[in-house]
Length: 258
Image 1 (cartoon, one colour):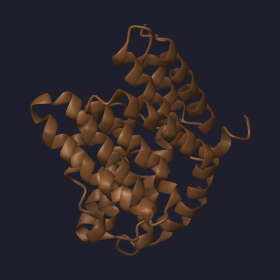
Image 2 (cartoon, one colour):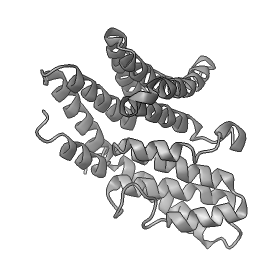
Image 3 (cartoon, helix red, strand yellow):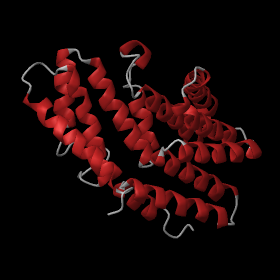
Image 4 (cartoon, helix red, strand yellow):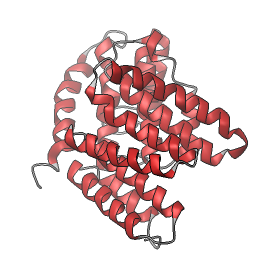
């Protein structure tokens, strides 16, 4: 196992040590329990879950966790679960499911504005909206408008100096331009998303940007040269990241297409 591949595994080990202490607590869903869904998501990405779209497995039971969090009025924990579910649904290409989860997430700005995952939540909320603009063409304009609202949030963070959200902005701009038929802008923004995520060390988002650029090329032309290039790059990034379940999904979904 290479040094890079252990990234996701190492994260799981940290969550395991932390989660063991968390589960000892007998209080009514203490604030730090909201970290447990993150560990289960890591396990899902590693392939250690019967259903990669559900946060049920070694670390937690999604239904029981939501029941406890709701009973305690712990909206942050509820939001964490739904945000992680949304990210998994999008990662695994289940865009309709992701759109259903969208409405389960209360605005992070009012629930917990300092939540560290607020940036990723906005990214996947925006990406889901843009994906649905392709699926529900009769609501295309509404979905684009909704997606652009999330993109505007990220743009504000970038302008405020948050460099960790720059690649997210480029990816959302690429998706928006693609939907608007602005090929040159889309290609430039996809390239920037790949470059900035790579430069800033976000290997998982680099994989995602390559996959989205691959899908762009598959829709644009019968020539699969560039689609294959970005497929290979996405597979390599996912493998290096250690997300074997995602790599398997990408391989199966594109058999016979490239």
